[in-house]
Length: 236
Image 1 (tube, helix red, strand yellow):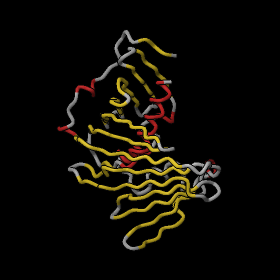
Image 2: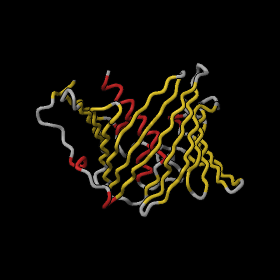
Image 3: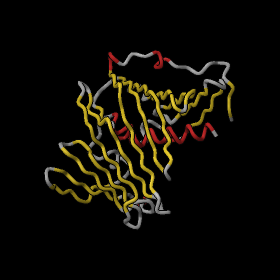
Image 4: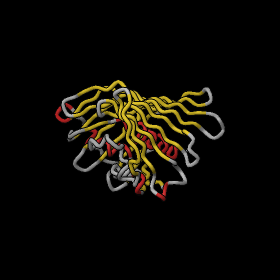
C-alpha cells in the first residue's frame, strides 16, 4: 500500500509541478508542499526535490509522508526506497520518464505548448484578448477518446491557465499558475492550483506551494549523490 501511495504522490508531483518554467539551470533544489482537498478531507504531501539536467535525474525526498525517497530519470527507471524498512521497489515504464511528462517540458523551457505538440496535439486556433494569448489544441486520433481539446492561456508569454475538456466537450480540469518569480536562470510560479471535476459531481482541489528554491551553484546537497544501500531488501 505504501508503494502505491508513493507512486500516486509522485505522479501528483509531476502533474502539479508542470508550472515550472526553466531555461538552462544545471541543477535545482526546491521544497514543495501539496495540499489536496476532496470530500472535506485534506491530504498533505511535503518533499524536497533535487533535479540534475545532464542525466534528467529527479530525486524526491518525502517529508510527509516521511521516510521514503523516489528517484526517476529520462529512461523511465523508477526507484522507491523506504528508509525505515530498508526496502526498495524498482520498475520501469515510459510513463515515469522525466522526458515524457509535463515537468520535462517546463524544465527545458518549453512553455508555449506545455508539451502538447510533442504529444501530437495541434494548435487549431489562437486568439488575443485583453493582453492574453488564448490557444486551442486538438488531440491526435489516439487521444480523442480522452479529450476534445485543451485550452491554454498565456500572459506575457508565461502560462497562467490550462483547461482540459473531455471527449464530450465538458471541462474536467482547470490549472492556474501564479505568483511568478524571476531568477537568474529561470522563471517559475510559486503557486499552482488545480481543480479536477469528477463524473460523480464531486471535485478534487489541489494546490502546490514552492519555496526554498536554489539553482546551480546554490543548489548544493548531498542528496544528489543518493544511492540505495546495497543491503536494501528488494520488493517485487
